[in-house]
Image 1 (tube, rainbow, N blue to C red):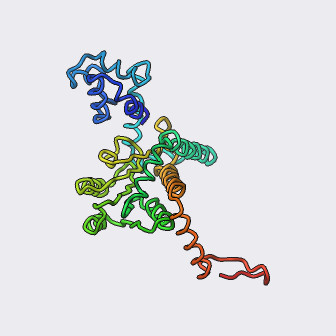
Image 2 (cartoon, rainbow, N blue to C red):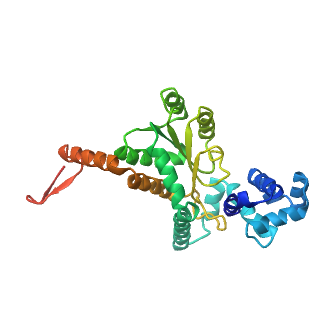
Image 3 (cartoon, helix red, strand yellow):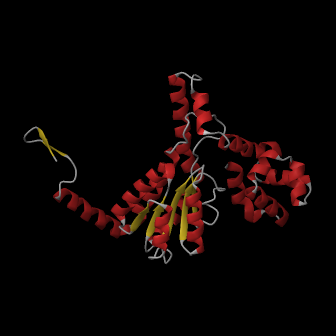
Length: 297
């Protein structure tokens, strides 16, 4: 969410009182969206003007404009798949719905570049490259992205493990993931409880966590060493589908994989060359036989 990203960037420059207010805002997004500025100030035992100063420090001209994204996010996350599907039925022509969905997908792609500086991507990639073992955890809709990311990572490095269930993490923690290992967790609202609890357990065991998620307030982001963000749906627009988009999720995963390849040096190149040679010998991929005009596998 944009106000929280802005507050994170300016946090070191704030006075102690404004820093305390910023930290309260980050922990209480629902209250920010529902309560008046005066009531929020009373909760913090500060003057209402302090909340206005906080909003202006973050680049907003009023507290109303500062809190608007919190209200939009609350409205968006409070809807259900059934209600979103019902709103879509008969409300738009096919072309209009397709156009709206494409616009939200494009925004999700743009959000990955907007929310993640190259320095953050590189720091994350370096942490993963230095790991003794890398676990990939994503359940529900996020499992497909975890599977894809693990598959591509294995091609480059070979020390990854796909965690199909929350119980898999417990096994891996007993066999080395907590000793120099990294857990990559992929999660977006609505967050799967088993994933959140698994991440908390991994952090307690000393595992380095990399979170690919849709908000700095995501429960999997709270204790992560690296947090990379994407927008699953534009907060200012109604849902163009009953299901949250996975475009941002896949995009940030591909960015991380690209930086691992770029920073992995000769080790990555040599492993990929060896695998490709092996695939060719075993005729893993379908090829055209130009000499006979037919197809061979």
